[in-house]
Image (tube, rainbow, N blue to C red; front, side, top):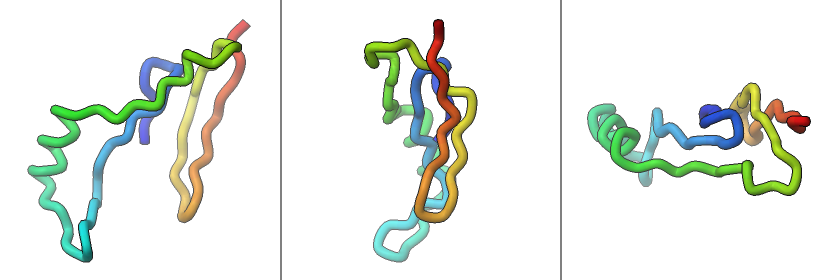
Length: 68
């Protein structure tokens, strides 16, 4: 995941396995360039800004604040 336009999170594929088979890097690059999966938080009632996202084993930490 990466921060997208300060108010969203974008899925970036890397080290992906499907049923135990690793997806080749060139295919991941093509998927990342041509398809976006974005979670846009700008639709929340209070404007939010994301400053960081960190993936840990089994969880994701998102540093988010309200924009005044």
